[in-house]
Length: 146
Image (tube, rainbow, N blue to C red; front, top):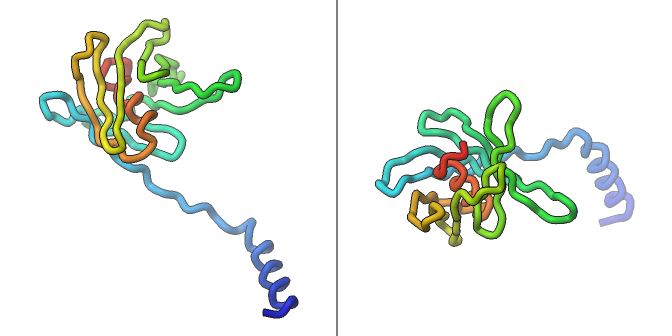
């Protein structure tokens, strides 16, 4: 390819860049399942947060990563008028806004599991992406924070 063609192609790409639009991908969906096998809700997994919906499809809240003083923290937000901070997660543990331990979460490459403070299983979901955040989110949902 000649230099002129190369520069022409580069110029066209640069001119087209402002008009280019990022591809919007739909979220991955994970059913939130109680120990009895009933579907309690759904997690919508986006590339930087997870939304949590009840069994009717109504948004209950979300969980996402926020950097605080150079450390990544997971925060759980209730879906209300103020988008209330109701909890946070760290090291496989879920805490409420008063820093009280609410339960535990664990994940594998394909499944996420939730346990209450006495280590009784309260549910699971098939989280295929963003597993740690998804697991903490379904923990907030199943343990009653949302």
